[in-house]
Amino acid sequence: MGRVVVAVPEWWSTGDTECLTPVETTVYFDSGAIADCAIPTPGAVDEVSALAVLDATGGYGEKLVGESEPAGEVSGREVVERDGCERWFEGVCRRVFAVPDEGVVFAVTIHDAGDGSYEEIRDSLRILPEGTTTVPLAGPDGWTPAWAAEPRAVDAVVRAVEGAGLVAEVVTAEQPRGANVDIADLPEGSLLDVNPSLGSVIDVGGTVTITVSGPRPGHRQERRG
Image (cartoon, rainbow, N blue to C red; front, side, top):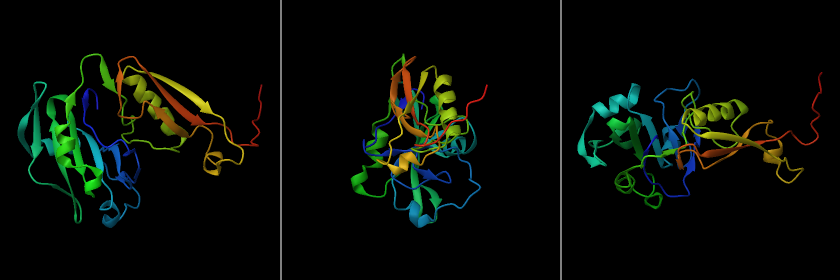
């Protein structure tokens, strides 16, 4: 988020959530909101590892910072850490650290030792040098889109990318004919890829390529004058 980064295993996904809750081992922006839908059971949440990034300047992220204690510094900025774990769902908790001056909170849940460790993620904390930033993890609506997100999510990604001082380049992928039904069935303009991926390090002013799905095979476009 901004110039603050941590490292997670490269196989972790991005934005694999349902009802704003991770359903796969993933990295995502957590707005602290409660979704108006059926929230996955605590058992499902307990089966994944996740790195949630929150805004420390308001709402739930600010509350977590208020519950934390000084735990050192990085590049001259104070780092704070919440003692113990934050009870999240029944039987599921996550550990929290933050860089208040940069407005960032990280909340980590580790399900399996093979997914890494909280300590490794916390100790990887870095402040990027001037001239570099990160591709925004969330659009203006405060959630991290994943593969196959609908066209309005692409619009949100474009706005977020441009708002971060980056160049958004939207390209359309050719729809396969019978080779991949999953892609062929997506509505035109659905999200297929973001490169560099959401949350990745990039030079200020750099280009983010957003790939979307094309028209469905056999779909006729109406021409109007």
